[in-house]
Image 1 (spheres, helix red, strand yellow):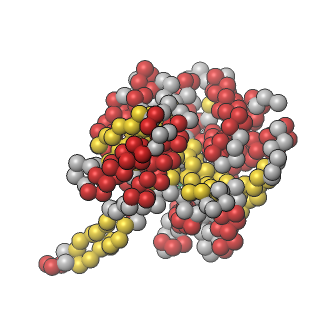
Image 2 (spheres, helix red, strand yellow; image 1 turned 30 degrees about the vertical axis):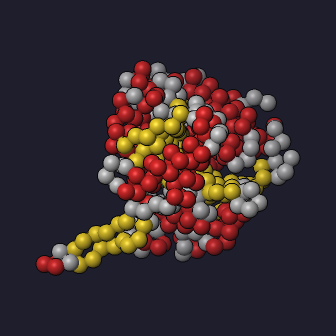
Length: 368
Ligand code: NAD
């Protein structure tokens, strides 16, 4: 089996604490399943700024570009809040996404049966939820030109951002969504604002055209939904969805909304993927949806499950170890069934555990 290289960027706040638990899982697979996952660790975010006066050194960036997968904990914290924009910890993330050309952001929202009561929605609405949001990550209004704030007459100012997408940008992210839907329930909902935006109309037309042109994608049930309606439907009846594909702006909001359906930020992983290069290689970064949680850093309270599930996604989408990825999910379900909970998902009658106790319990459930 070829050796795989993983770069670990623990980052700031709870990042190093949850990464330590992901490392236990990686080590377990190396020892018991001989996966030959070689990992190295580097600084990113505030930790890198403190050492190198930059949130991400060029060396670390090149290492990330060369790795089979990057696992990132979280970056940021009050210590670095007053730095100028280019030095802020969050720039590390933006630079990695940009330079690695990570255009597709995958955010699953899965509601573990054992945690239905953590959601604000009724159990029957949320139990068994398993949806995947595919968000375009490198185009649209966050990057479009012109942009800026300009003075206008009467001492007023105007702010400008440009929402722009090309056919190619739309089709490559729609392709990711269709390919993932083929491995799931073969249903894609594309969310746009084609009723009021030309770029939204182009989005709808290109997604539909890609679907109709392909004999494989024709087997997928494709529907289009206005993004505002999609936001409502996610709360009304989220189980109607399988894969949702949408642009950068709407994806930002819809994926956060979907995330909170499940009740806890500490449970949610994410993946960001590039296109295949000429050698057929995809660059990728996996990270929890939550931030560096400075309020609980160093208190052994952080939930490591989102981090461990991010590694499970890396096994599935970058390293070709589907079976092993499923093993991690089963181990997590089993630990939750046993009643173990970190503080963020604690309920009465359950056993409260620390970050490392949760990691150890998950490792103990992995089957040799
Ligand atoms: P946050 O996600 O860090 O925390 C929000 C709340 O959720 C906090 O109460 C926190 O304690 C809790 N929480 C988050 N993850 C948890 C976990 N694994 N276990 C238990 N509880 C958890 O968001 P924030 O407070 O808005 O941001 C804190 C810092 O993180 C900021 O500097 C922000 O810029 C940064 N941030 C980084 C990323 C990233 O690295 N991808 C994402 C979002 C925010």
